[in-house]
Image (cartoon, rainbow, N blue to C red; front, side, top):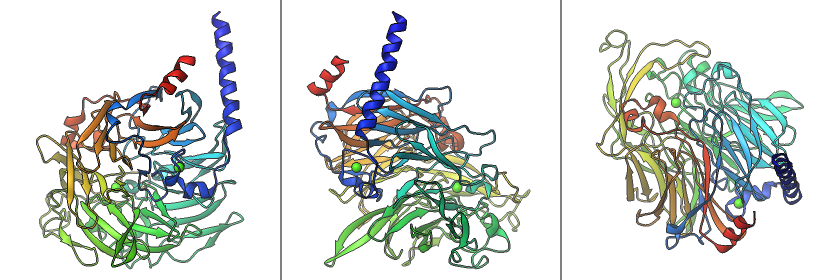
Length: 597
Ligand code: CA
Ligand code: CA
């Protein structure tokens, strides 16, 4: 009898696979460009290449969100759990979701049943700085793509989960890794690389989605050459926009960091990839006097060949590990009868910037956190007004003791006013919903020399809380005035992405385990559900069979438990996990479907 049951289950699964094969079709570039307007699928990280994380759906709204109920949950399984920072994709009734340790699943979006699982075979000695996370996949044609912790790009057949091509993007033994979700623009799979803490040179690489042939490669540190590839051969593609020693002393540019580890967004109006770059390496800024381009910057790149169209540096001669990777979200507004093509970003350094995305010009900026110690404000061009004594001291200076420069108190901490977790922009309210944190650090500098595959910091630090009862603050920010319209404080640091909807809702998760929904105008908490482990993933919403669904990955981890210092006390008892949860409003149709199985 048991044997019979197993056979029939196998048969049912094959039938399921067949029905999916019959209904799915190749994803086109046009579908990806329209992603935000088509709620029946989610084809891109950001729920649209502009990264707004705004859904036009409103059947789930302020009036009924309190009835939101689990539809199914899916376990990532395995002994290895850790941080789940992924954003699910949805196509033709199938969810594609990545998990920790470079794993990816296809799951039936109606039932939560697994269709296939692919585990990257990670070598010993991978060097992710900040947990074994993965932030999501990309989808195009009949394939799904994701990057791995050993810095490979993997293309899988969507139906079977079998690899079609696998390419080495960079050498993991130098410290490169990939945690970002790739994006697909006009048939090219584009990814950034991590590794700034190991003195790699950041790079952005594009592949032909069909063949896996490399299309172009763009280093992010001034002085390194970019290339396009023709018939597999590198063709020089102009200098990066400057000579090696314009903003870097000596040979420091050769290990200059600037890792674009968070990937990016794409703006169709200007045909630009918008991507941020991480800290210049090493952290000790006294070893590299100069602006250190293009680290701690936002870049606009031509997706056809990777040339840099413009750059905007948030923290010149960055010396606090503020990086500069935070997402640039494209949005429009009217001013003096003209449409302004703007992009906004909330930097780890504590300032919120509004840029003209046609040319990178600074429009305005303001703090989005309660206190910034390292700069007193921004100049008319958006450059920071550095505070006297705000920079950690020179280990070779007069104040140095025992090889350590003067320790300074800095706020925000290097984990940032906002870290990787993406904010959302509502086309209804015109507000940005920013998952931010209030914390500080003691930071000091030391000497360091570059050694392949070793940490290249030249700094030490201790992160500390600044308030008795909270670190995290979900903020509604007005991008025109800098006004904080509302705030919601959370005991633990916020580390998950935000979703907003035309139904007037703002969703985000907490390390305490909750997925929460807020009123987009008032910040009132309207709904919460405890997922059993910390939520540090990106919530999404989509439509299936006429109903609105919400999904989020759950699983506590990421950089906070590794690097949080005294803040680690707040989170030390949080349990690990690895699930994706899916919710919808109760409906008789949904219940009948469950009963018939
Ligand atoms: Ca869509
Ligand atoms: Ca960094």
